Image 1 (cartoon, one colour):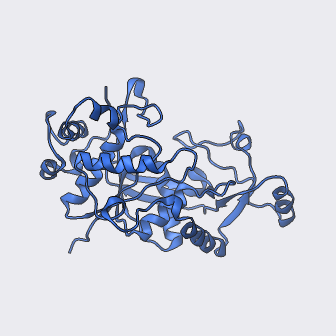
Image 2 (cartoon, one colour; image 1 turned 90 degrees about the vertical axis):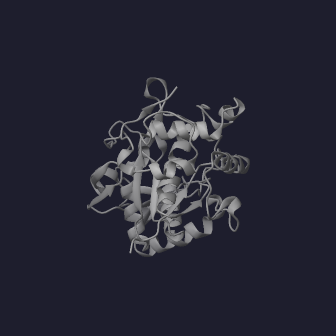
Image 3 (cartoon, one colour; image 1 turned 30 degrees about the vertical axis):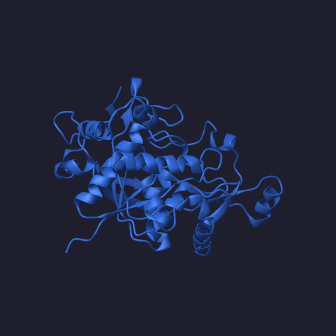
Length: 310
């Protein structure tokens, strides 16, 4: 008997949803609904400087306008699942990791982290040098008088291997290719890696569909899920929609946001039909609702290369 699928929408309410966000949400919805599965909506609003509740409500309205409904969270009733309201939960899981001896305070400044000698991963991201990992209690006490620390998770010299539903086998060494990573910033804000691993586990998410820019963070989340006692979901990382020069679409820049598209008078079926065509699900661009796309959905048809839009 095939296991039931629970997918999720996990937008960051930092601005109006753009076409790239809608692309990922549509594929997540089609993947879950085509298998008779459920969808959870969760607002990933950890960054207090950029995220606003009014953006979250607008995101929900835009999803419904597109015909992308969900079963839990948001306007579906019950808890609305704002990560900013779940800090006690993240602290509970931090304590579990602390009891296992996996956390340590990190006093490195941004300048320290971006030093010329800092190693970089293949995607250009920094790999932490481990400078604070083995500080003595006396050194930690002295540095804490000068700077509030972040909390980092120790990773072992271990290989993580998983199969992505779009890009296939992915293999990294946690220590060499990822490095110790932050779970709580020095200002007390919990890191995305901790929040998403805990929430996916607690909410019973079995399938994660998101942009391929998050593929490299998956090994960290798999390691966290294992240490916290949660089963790992299946991952499907999808190509990014990019603009001129291959630049990824951004809420900050207002790239093809749904507000502008809706103001132009375009129908939601035109939007979802175009996204399906861009993904490779249809052979020509035509107005199609998400419901009409269900019988056409097949992961083997989804493109792997980033997709240029105008």
